[in-house]
Length: 98
Image 1 (tube, rainbow, N blue to C red):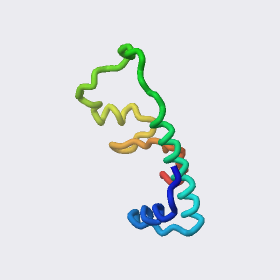
Image 2 (cartoon, rainbow, N blue to C red):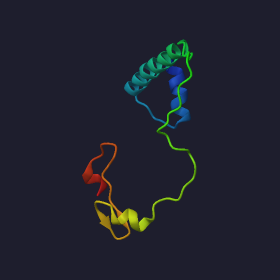
Image 3 (cartoon, helix red, strand yellow):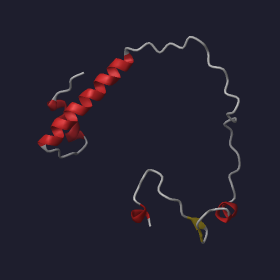
Image 4 (spheres, rainbow, N blue to C red):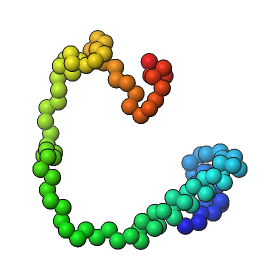
């Protein structure tokens, strides 16, 4: 689905983005490609022929008491006072996270 640069300009204005011409061109191209892909997906037949069997390994989704903070800290790899450090999860730079 093609998207016009005018539409991108309008979206950028709504989002308070100041895009240079290269960013505008790239966003127009990329958003157009995404919308085209979504359009193709919406044309796909996703009818499920057979009902999925129940997944026996899933637990019931019910509230339960959480782990006591003292226990969590006592088994943590790097406890500090009442807290513990965890490494970055999404590939962040360790130096930035302390």
